[in-house]
Length: 92
Image (tube, rainbow, N blue to C red):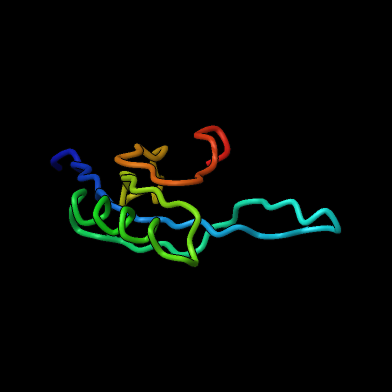
């Protein structure tokens, strides 16, 4: 029997953020708006840049993650580009 080879699957994602108002002081916090998957890093980066200019969006990230199809484990995100108001890396 041959050893089973693992081929990681890479996902390129554009994730947008919207501001959520809460409480009487109307202090805003960020929440995820949309997550859109692409086949290339440049497509995700271009979309994040466009989305950041939208009136509905306060920020956008383009990032990649690797998934092991056998175990379902997903890597920590590697940021390709960050635009506008986005969360700190630790809170991702």
